[in-house]
Length: 370
Image 1: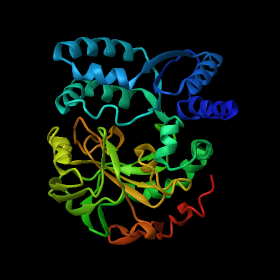
Image 2: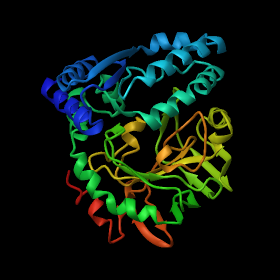
Image 3: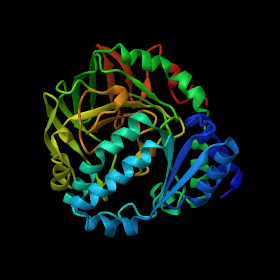
Image 4: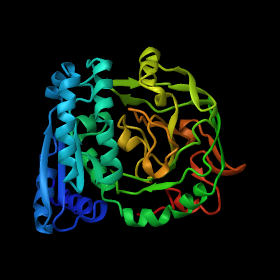
């Protein structure tokens, strides 16, 4: 891996994504691989006059720790975590998992217990601390993308080094249109869905919280969703790859759910009351990401896709839904994936993955130069 490319990404994360200032305390969290990027970040943070802090997580060890969790143990940990995060101004999460099924056999009740205790800290971090998540180009991630390692590294550095400042400007028309929209309809193979987004608020995702990035998002009015959706993109969640996920909604609630692992899917949706309601609706448009690779951070940015997310709503586009989960499930509407349409207030906005609304055609991949 070429150090100068890591250095460029480290510069982007520090100067653009987090806008780090001298004197700030920045937590760098590395899951599995990622030490080379972490080292670049440490050097550049010191050069900025900031204070880097380090945390390393090893899933093989985390797995054993999770299996034995108790409420008393978690209560003590939460106390430590709360004190620590009060002194942190920013964080960078580097995810270099070498086996994303490592935690698969952790009992669901332990996952739920951990999520319940940690959700308030997670909300504090999400809503009060600037932070960004970036994956690391491991051989495992290259394998998921079905690419040779070197080819995947080139792809990775390309999509993580796009000019996200330009992307921020380019997506303003979509932000403005979504922000004044009331009624949304989505149609496609196995999908006919309606809901309202009126008054919820809209946000842009352009490299400030995730890398890579490229979406505009909001949330449905919590009880407004009716109809059926069939997701056409496999999703790896809690150590399991889910395919052919299909939901039926009545007044916002998922009342029927099926997939290749229907029982496990419903177990996840029964995590808490909010898990059967939607916390995010997003339209994605990254022109350099065109096909799924089984990694949500990349797949949710695919040009011509949208995601409709069971679980917790984000603070910037909050419909009031609360949950311990937030699961970005993705549907690609380009012709090779079956096509589809998105309508805002009875006006066709996007057809077969391409924006057709006159204010948005500049966001199509052949026009969006970054």
